[in-house]
Structure formats: C-alpha cells, structure tokens
Image (cartoon, rainbow, N blue to C red; front, side):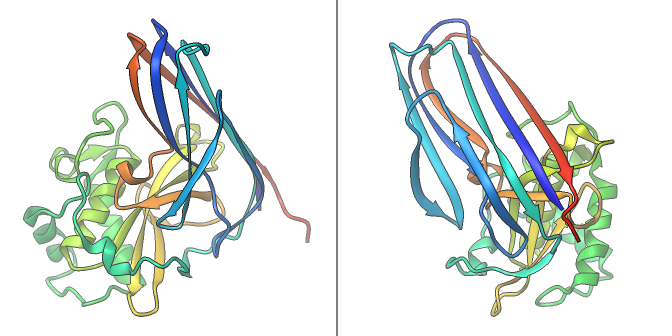
Amino acid sequence: MTLHIQHTTHYRYSQPLSHSVHTLHLWPVSGPCQEVIDWSVQVPGTLHEQPSVLGNRVHSFTLRTGADTRNIRIQAGGRIRVLGRARFQDGIEIPPGFFRHASPLAEPHERMTAWASAVLGGEVPRQPDESTLLRLVSAVSQHVRYRPGNTGVETTAIEAFDWGLGVCQDQAHVMVAICRGLGWSARYVSGYFHAVNEPELASHAWVDVCLDDSQSEWLSLDVTHACPTDQRHVRLAAGTDYIGCMPVRGLRRGGGDETMEVQIRIDAEPDPL
C-alpha cells in the first residue's frame, strides 16, 4: 500500500514575533516497516537538518523580526510505501535498555504496575512475547477509553490511567509506562493513521515494545485499536514519550495570542500486483 500524505501546520499570532525557533520531527525514515518514496518539508525560512536522534530525522528553522511572523505555515508531505510489518529488528545504535528509563510523560507508577501484573495473572516474564503484549494492550485500551477533549499534551500516564480516558497519546503513554514498570523496554511512536471512517486519527500515536533486547526485536502496537500496527500506519518518529518526538515544537518571543490549526490529508493507492 502506498499512502500520499499532506500535513499542514498553521500558526497565527495577534502580534508579530520577535524571535522563534522550531524543531521538527516531520520527515519519516525508510526502514523495516516502510519505504519513503519521496518527501519534502517547506517552512518560512531556511530548513536545517540536525544530527539524527534515536534514528529520527530532525530539522529546525529560525524566524526573526522582519519576516511575516504573524502567520507561520509548515508543510510536509510525500509518498510512503507501507510494508505492514509490526514485528521487526531495529537498526539504530541506541540499545533497547535505554527505553526502560522513566520519562516525564511516561513514568512508571506502582498503581499501574500492580494493575498490569493482575491483568497478566501475576506472572510477568523477563521479556514479553506477542500474546502477552496483545492481552495487555487490549486491557489498556479498555481501561483508558478513547475520549477527546479531556486531556492535553502535558497529561501524564498516571493521570490518564487514573481518569480512565484520553486520546491516542495518553493511551500510548500509559502502555509505555506500564511496560517500563514491568521491566520491559518500550517507546512512544508518532505518525499517521489512514482510515476513512476515523479522520480524527490521521495524526496518531502508538508504541514499540522490545521482545528481545539482545536482538533488538520490537513489536509495534496500536493501543487505541488494541492491535499490532499494519498497512494503515506510517511512522514519523519514536522517542521516550511525546516530548521527545513532537512533530512540531517551538519556542518564541513576542507574538501575543497564538492559535494553531493542523490539517492532514491521506490518500491510499494500492500497489500493483
């Protein structure tokens, strides 16, 4: 399956900016799950590629007084051939154990760990297998119901777990935090999801959990849909949590009030036989 993706982020400010710096995780990488056929990113400035972080392609740009800084439009898009593999070996140099450490939005908590242990019948393997993870991801999806409008980008895993609701970001953070609490390596993935009947999930999040640290073998799981990832999923970036791989992150001086609008269009083109 080849997916055509157009992603536009539009910032509007009530006053001109005096200075802004933006970091972008908006350029997908070819790997065992997908092939980038073509891709581009357009920004109102000079786009600079940064050193690779955790296998991601990272870019930045800076704006200063003198440009049209009341309106900032960031556009990314291209074609991705999705291979539909949920289980794969990772080629990045960071050892999987790095992703067992707590991070601000996906920190383990004893309440979540005890709950997950009970879900698994009190028997927690040293390294998880696929059936164990599918049982756990289904339980997390049922416990943290998908409900937009109740959480924000700074909501932590334990908050979403206690409230029992959230969006894909929150469900992913809960799953990552639980896996870390059980001693498993897990990371947060940001990307795109193609489903005609779920356009609100075009910008999506899921998790990678390591099945074998020594072989760097991972399984990608969509917590919202309680299933392994498939040909509907395109990976943008992976990190310890949302903060580590935000599609667009910026710091600014001036500008007054800010509004942001995101539009994502995804069209599918079946590959020829």
